[in-house]
Amino acid sequence: MKAVALTRHLPIDDPQALLDIELPTPVPGEHDLLVRVEAVSVNPVDTKLRSPKPQVEAQPKVLGYDAAGVVEAIGDSVHGFRPGDRVYYAGDVTRPGSNAQFQRVDARLVGHAPRSLDLAEAAALPLTALTAWELLFQRMPFDSERGGDGRSLLVIGGAGGVGSIAIQLARRAGFTVIATASRIETIAWCRTMGAHHVIDHRHTLAPQLEALGFGQLDAVLNLADTDRYWDAIGQLLAPQGHVGLIVEPAGTLKIGDPYKGKCIGIHWEFMFARTRFNTPDMAEQGRILERIASLIDAGALRGTRTATLVPINAANLREAHRRLESGRTIGKLVLAGW
Image 1 (cartoon, rainbow, N blue to C red):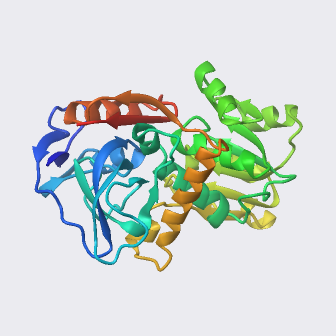
Image 2 (image 1 turned 60 degrees about the vertical axis):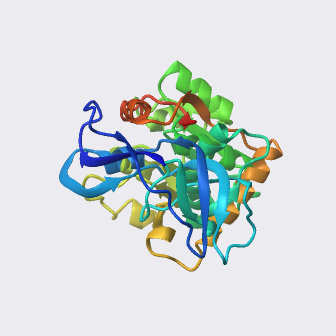
């Protein structure tokens, strides 16, 4: 099968950073699906795992953690899927990734793709939808239906992949959603995703929030830069408020006041934690993806794909990584077809 892989960790402008190769087609295990991959999307985890470092891989390493495709074969103990099903998933960092024509994936991590979306649109959703859902409704103490009623939520980095889904899920749950963005196009995107208000993260947040009538906030999702906004979030949150984080800090965070004094809940989300530690509730990810698909098909959520590159190959994946590393992408970038 065709695949895109790396053997050395190089800057993305190096033509050797990602390479077109051929690999044996995998065989599904007892609890696996073998999926014919039709589309993938890129996420910061892809660029982080590829980023320059001295390490040399003994075998070609295939990246990619968002995919949509068609079930080719199933393991002996798999239930709920059959060959020919359209599926989508975010996969598992402990296994080879989705940048290959065929991928072996644990069936518990997979959902049936939304019927109303093509597979390229579906490939944009899994990792960001799982991250946003788990953070808001499983790490943080909010119900997915009306858990935001009467509450305010600030989403820092609203136009990114996770922010684009988080805004929609939070608004649907009843939150008054304030997003941050700084460019005309990202401000417009956040409003399209459902943000009630948009403020500029290039400027001090508190005065902008006060001008909108928000002296304190019930919750904040910092999806951009944990260190940069840490002190500001502590001041902005109301007593017994909650902050959700996905970006590893560069330094040591001060967990004392105002965080301690206000009893602020600090919630980390890493979408691959369940698969990395083989937790008993891994099937929860498949259930979330089925729920997301039903909301998409009901018109309660919308897709977040903003660009598509064709086909899936090393040159286009290098371009996708380059765009993502620029920090100026909006929504999700997808690659489709071989």
